[in-house]
Amino acid sequence: MLGLLLTGGIYTVLAPAQAEQAQSDEELVAQGRELFLVGCASCHGQNGEGVETVREGYAKGPSLIGVGAAAVDFQVGTGRMPMARPEQQAPRKDVVYSDEEIAALAAYVASLAPGPAIPTEEDYSIDGLSEEEREEAIVRGGQIFLTNCTACHNFNGSGGAMPRGGYAPSLKGVESKYIYEAMLTGPQAMPNFSNGNLSPEEKRDVIAYLRSIEESPEYGGFGLGGLGPVSEGLFAWILGIGGLVGFAVWIAAHTTRTTRTPQTEEGAQA
Image 1: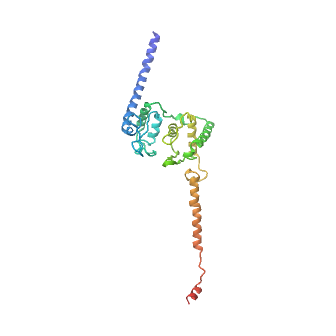
Image 2: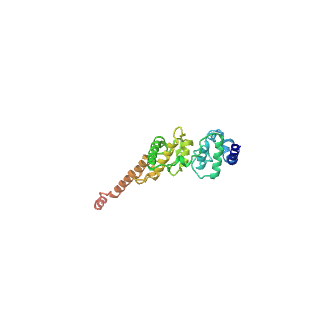
Image 3: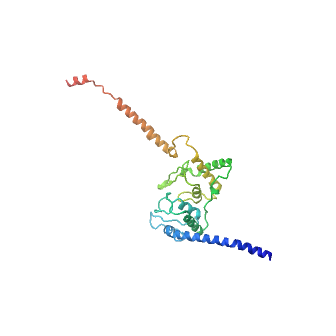
């Protein structure tokens, strides 16, 4: 009798909270579906199954089944979605939805199939590490970034041009959560660095390296955007050598003198 009373009492205390949580999740998913049908279904389908290309040169939205809440949080949280022209690369712009609506959309897409969840601050922050561990994380992150990311994002995360009119966006000033989600989900032309390719700790280390770059002063002076030898060589040719050529022309124009004297000119006229 005592066991039954104890079990019944514990169930009475915990069951309503569990039911309320389940109901809350269902309401969030339902709210997300309503938002999805209004703002997303025209490109991604009524149930997130995607819409195939309707004509050449005009692309519709891919399937969202299995992309997870992290992909939605990245795309909608950075303003890349919704977009007017799906055939182009999605730039970062003003966010259309509120935080609550983004959470609802992410919950609905996550309910379609298992996928990457939205990372927490513990996943991408090194604040809980000691000073020595932070330095080690930055060094490891730099090695990973230089190996896997510099071909597109430049050696210091400034971004750059890509084939077929695309571009790798700058990583400077981007929130750590969105960098983590981009590595996790691989938006558009970016490779997908799943946890099997880069562990959560390695993703965190890459973010730590990028944050350390932003905090480092420019010891060399004007960095020309940090775009590397292309911008520096262009600066040298146009302003350096070009300035020298212009200065040489100016010197020649102001030092040229005629060899004819006034007396010679009068004799020639006579």
